[in-house]
Amino acid sequence: MPRLWDISPPVQEGAPVFPGDTPYQQHWAASIAPGCPVNVSTLTLSPHVGAHADAPLHYEEGGTPVGALALDAYLGPCRVIHAIDRGALVTWEHIAHALQDLPARVLVRTYQRAPVERWDPQLAAFAPETIARLADAGVRLVGIDTASIDPAESKTLDSHQVIRRRGLRVLENLVLDDVPEGDYELIALPLKLTSADASPVRAVLRPLA
Image (cartoon, rainbow, N blue to C red):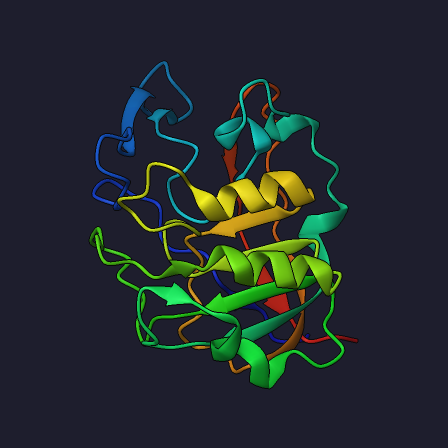
C-alpha cells in the first residue's frame, strides 16, 4: 500500500485556537452501561480547530458556506514547498526555487516543527503578492502549516482578500514536519456543513501514481 502522510494535527481538548475562538470540548451524552449499549459523545468546537478549509463566508459578507463549495480543489496533485523559518511573510523569493510546472495546489511548510499543542502569535503567513502570483500561475488552492494565511494580528486579512478576489481555496493549520519537498496527491475534503464558514478536514498526502 502506498505511504500516506497524515498532515492533520491532533484535535483534542487543549488544541490551540485563535484567541477568542471556541476551543474543542467533548462530553459524553451516553456511556456503555447496563441498559445502554453505546458510547455517544457531544462535541463543541470551532470549525477552524485543527486542519481546516476556510470558506468564502469566513472573509466575505454573504460569501459561500463551506458545504456549498465544489470539492475538486481539495483533491488532486499538489506541491509541498519548504520556506522554513523565513520570517513573518512567505514571499515569492522564498518559494521561487520550486515553482516550475506548478500543479493546481500548493502547500507551504514554514515550521521546523509545528506547534500543535500551543498557540503561536508569531505565526508565518503569506504575503498577499505571493498569493496573487500563485493565482496567476494557475494555482487553485493554497495551504500553510500555520493557523492563518494572514498575520495573527491582521484586521484587514489582505491575503484572504486576494483569495476572495481570485476565487482560490485555502487550507490552514496543516502539519508538514515530516513531508519532503515535492509533488503528491492531496486529499483534504471538507464536511458538507451547509451554513458554516469553515470545516475541519483530515488532510493526507500520498505519492502520485
